[in-house]
Length: 294
Length: 293
Image (cartoon, rainbow over all chains, first blue to last red; front, side, top):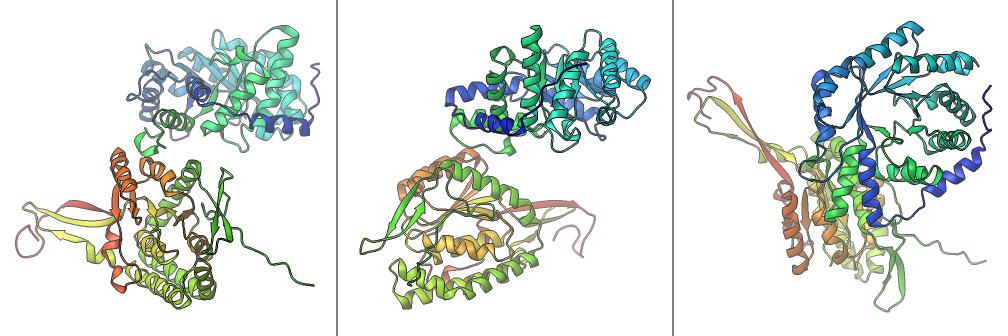
């Protein structure tokens, strides 16, 4: 049985509040913004997604702002399994990866063999990363072993693809549960742990992300193995992204400050970061009118 | 026991709320005798940014209101101002304006709002046109609001100048960010209280106080401000505004009139912040004279 640390909620809130008061000088801010750009998983996960929409997003992924050379591309695009082969084709030749959600995203309410098929489908079509959801219902009724086995068997199907495990913290109700689910996922073989599907509010609050970062830190201190982190949902402004980067640096250290180990799941963040970058270079506040539509 | 007087804190008006400036700075407003009237927020670039964000957010909803509804809300502003006449007169006197002039200024302001309230559902009929073309199209032009408008209120009046510039802007469906008079700022913030209680959606009008010189650059280079109405009288500042405005082809409208005069209000103050949209509608023959109108 995994022994999860109890969470001191008041302590978490105080620590999180301190991350938001760091004064960041302009030059570091600019670097932070560019780093944030390179960590974005550009996401479209709608029932109404069409090949056209995915194509357009893939184009955006490696042409973030053509009028402004020298900017990094985003880390990955995140789509439904049926869109993987298209995204793969569109991104050929770039180093933008393709992540696919799976295991009956977003609810996870499907039989095990369907979840396995879902994952295998995405992997077979070339997904570099798999974003799975855990069975929150089972977790909340205390069937931890079920959840553990579920993650482990998906991990097996993933093969070379990296596995991100979505805890959907908005449905786990307490930080203690978040910590428990994070530990569970890490021990079951997750390469990344991810906060949310983006379909439930609240999503990636800083409290939740901090709790998960602490789980990663404790595991690293014990085993020396690094686990990645992906807050997703609700991070739509540069300011929030910078707060998150400050938190990662101060909790886990510089080693995690790359898109190998840290990602933002977001759709509208990229434009806001672009606007901030151009603002800090030209001094003029920018307008969404002059940037691509998300 | 004598009662302790409760003095008003003059704050900003952004997104329907009354925040202090994020910078924490202020300047002291003094009367002619040199004693302090109030501390006034000295807005920063970030306040401008926040105000523009609020104005942008409010623009869609406001411009989609029916013209009639906008007229009703403007009329409501006049009603609210009427109810606070005495307060405004006292505040104008506090800023050194003699009573008779102060009374006149408030009255003209109220009447001017009613004047533009009436235009709300009429200006488009007057300013739009059906255009003769030599092909089989029904060709017509209508007015649409420009978007977010930055307004520099005149320095030499506290209420009437600001009202005269802002009301035509919002009657045409724009939202706006106003920089109040630096030397006479009090009525701007009290006018915000009037707007706040007038069914005007939060963010349609945002009011900042501070230094014209400091903020003119931020206003005019802001890519999300679509037009600037300049009521000031500083030619160096205006030159800079015009130059910066080229970055996103902002309209710059200069308005310098004696706002106490009745002829300082007209329909064209509405059309100053309107864009003309022309539609070519393919059609066979309309009317008797083949295709053209």
